[in-house]
Image 1 (cartoon, rainbow, N blue to C red):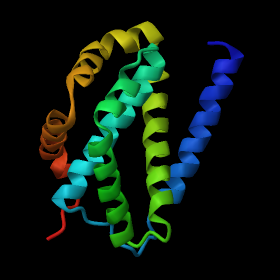
Image 2: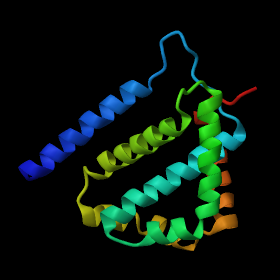
Image 3: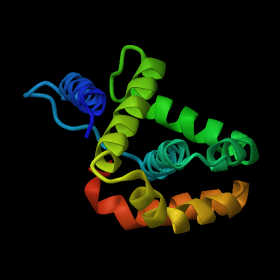
Image 4: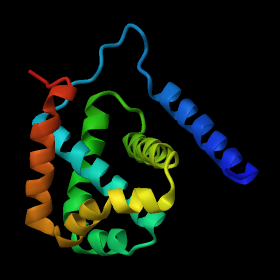
Length: 158
């Protein structure tokens, strides 16, 4: 590892720690609950962000192509998350979405930063191939499946 790579990793780690610390709720505040539509939107945006990081890492155009094909669906999911942030008391819900996207991207970059690029790209080949095929309805179906798989990791609103 070069000194520059170490510095970039440390800077990323510091940003991640600061983002995580600022995202923590007050000790007395309960964690926000998620509606089922919020969970689906959260999973869709996580998928999109992972695709962004991997496309950049592996130097492929999947992310650009994916966002063009799924623009309307992505905008709807972003609006759903902004609504979630608004309902849970965010003073600036749009800024909360930006912080959320940055946090996810940082986490994914840090995780893949521990591996050599060829290994990351080889491990991610099926993910990238899948993303190359997803469009509107298929992306919605995939996001709904991800939401079902990960629902237990959310506090669902009653």
